[in-house]
Amino acid sequence: MKVYFLTLGCRVNQYETDAARRLFLDNGHENVDSPEEADVCIVNTCSVTGEADRKSSQMLRRMAKNNPGAVIVAMGCASELKNGEVPADIVIGTRDKNTVVARVEEFLAKRDNKELDHKTSHIRPEVSKSDEYHDFGTVLSPEGTRAFIKIEDGCNNFCTYCVIPYARGRVVSRSEESCVKEAEFLVENGFKEIIVSGIHLCSYGKDQGKDITALLDLLKKIDAIPGIERLRLGSLEPKSMTPEFIAGLKELKHLCPHFHLSLQSGSDTVLKCMNRKYTTAEYEDRVNALRSEFPDMSLTTDIITGFPEETEAEFAETIEFAKKLKFAKIHVFPYSEREGTKAAAMPQMDMSIRKARAKRLIEVSEKLEAEFSSSMVGNEAEILIEKFEEREGKLVAEGYTANYVRTFADVTGREFSRGDIVKGFVTGSEKSSCFITIA
Image (cartoon, rainbow, N blue to C red; front, side, top):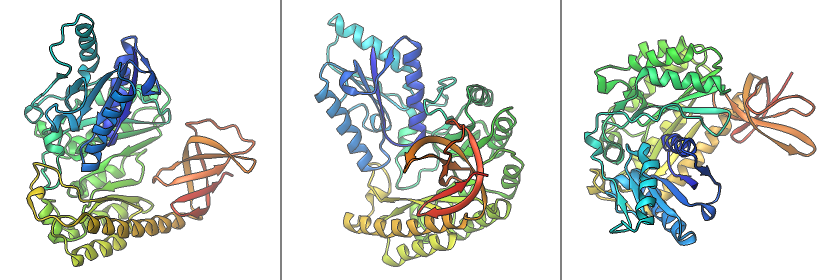
């Protein structure tokens, strides 16, 4: 079969798509780049926002219209939350993605034998009651330079705006042995940077009665793998940044000094309504503790604008807090009602206000990004080369620094390859990017 994949949403979704792709390839099928030429079109759906939910359904319908003979498969969060009621031939939940090959082959066999009573073959797992991590085994990323490892699934926090605990279920952790084995496999296959990810990364081991030291123990083992050069972390929980955990991070030899600590609001009143379990003072304290150990670190975050009943004064607190913390980048999201969450039952503000506030915060973020990039001028930095392009007769390499700033280097006349790590001095910046000169 010729199989086309489309991924919507987060890094975990991308990882799971890569895993599903590998399953098809291992079973003798072919990956294609166009849905029109595919026998099977697979959409790994997202439902974190209303827009993502709508786009998931839109893409499924578009593929069915443009390729009516193809088998349309919906996987993931939107499929789970809609209890299978999505426009697809096969619908698979969030923790049954490793069954996708078998489901497609079964569907085709029944269709060929005219055994189907109806068009759609649904799977409706009770994800929230599942206590098993469904391991894909080793997953080889097609990216070729950086690779993700998923170590955990689910979330127990139930923030009032978030559907993820309903879509992904409670926390389940992958075995340490399996995580390390995959990391070793990736390094052996030439990946220089490993990105450890999960739905709620700091809950790794919680389902087994462990605390944050479980994550630290795993990171130490991955960090010790011969040949690894960079170890990067996904989104972290602010309250998990204890002095002991930070001290443990400092001991890691290959850790990238880039920390993504989700904030969501710079107002304590709004944070309480969101059921975020920290205050702005506690968040700031954790950031200061990290910066004392990692002075060159970049700090990125997520912020929601226009949360129900957020006042202009509370939004102003968020603006000022963002400036005070000097984020290197803010991922801004206008609040989106998600059915079944507590926030959806609260009084909602007009979408135009949410978007206007998002625009204002994005402008702040862009200024902070430029300031952070400018602050790197004169410093030594290294980039992991991801691609090359011709610019005004010069060969320019593009990649990211360890603290995750997009950076360019003139490599004309030099023998570098994609995936190489090169060092130089930052000699200039423009907006959110830097330029290095290689010695």
